[in-house]
Length: 160
Ligand code: COA
Image 1 (cartoon, protein in one colour):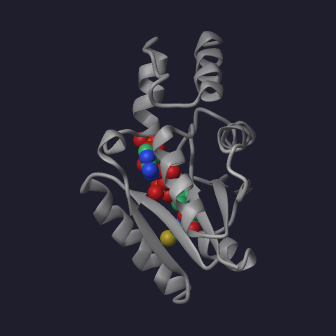
Image 2 (cartoon, rainbow, N blue to C red):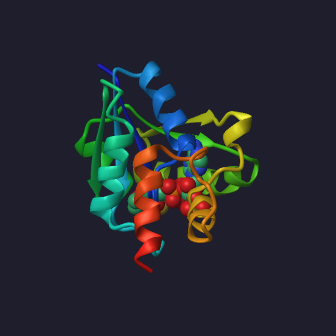
Image 3 (cartoon, rainbow, N blue to C red):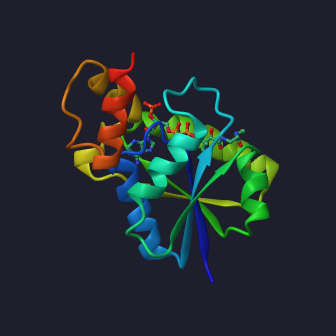
């Protein structure tokens, strides 16, 4: 049985992430979407909210589960006996950063493979921070995120 982890901050999950998760789910028997709790980023959504939204957004995918983690990614992958980490590559700007992350993870655990899936053109420049900014200014984000995330963003910014 093959198991992949698709890690991220998911603040919040977007159609760009879901596209990568769906494609990972066709390649592997099981996929765990791993929502990072301890991220250097100051997040808009709490770890519970980010995990719950990722769960709702992927509930139609039978071989996908969502968990949060607060350790090194390599330790989490070992604990889950994952065969690979799968990440999306968007524009060329992702490459340098992902190259560095992969090099570091390889130093920590040489057996952990990271597999990159190219994002399609429509999601090439999509990111969670763009979605957050758009939503904070009252813009329509329904083209970029599932309905549950759209609703959560509206609620978050209505209370600010
Ligand atoms: N489609 C759309 N957007 C995408 C995307 C995709 N397929 N893939 C990534 N993104 C965006 C995210 O929305 C996010 O956007 P933002 O910064 O504008 O909000 C950005 O790309 C970065 O994604 P993020 O989810 O924050 O992932 P990351 O590449 O920074 O890595 C972890 C996050 C959790 C994988 C990483 O921090 C980690 O492994 N943490 C655990 C601790 C650890 O092991 N650290 C490494 C030590 S060397």
